[in-house]
Image (cartoon, rainbow, N blue to C red; front, top):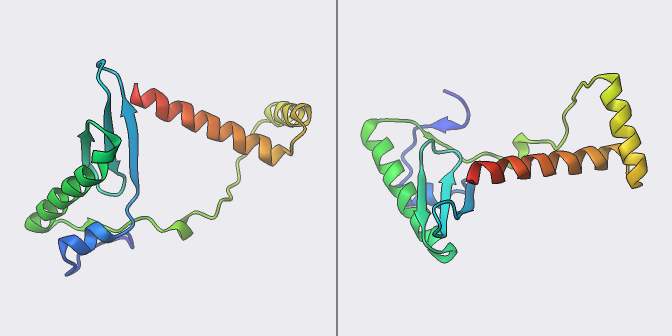
Length: 134
């Protein structure tokens, strides 16, 4: 069993109080606005609300149902991800030609290569997440 999956004697409310990662996105795909939320660490734990204000209560209800079901089925309940699990650093090997293009683009924008790559990655991830919402 990994460090992020444990079976404990916590109460359902104690689990709900833990700092789980909750992603919320606005969905206008069917012409009506809805807010879809998921708990990243609890596979399949999702909900939808008509307004952003309703999301928190709906997420807690979804978490409660997910955790109750897991306990009844004897399934391990994942713990929230720890911020320390991510250092903010990773090494990426790229072709020399891409390295050159990135360095030139960073210089053109007057920023460091690190700042340029960080911003570009953030934009790409944001576009990907937005594309999934559509």
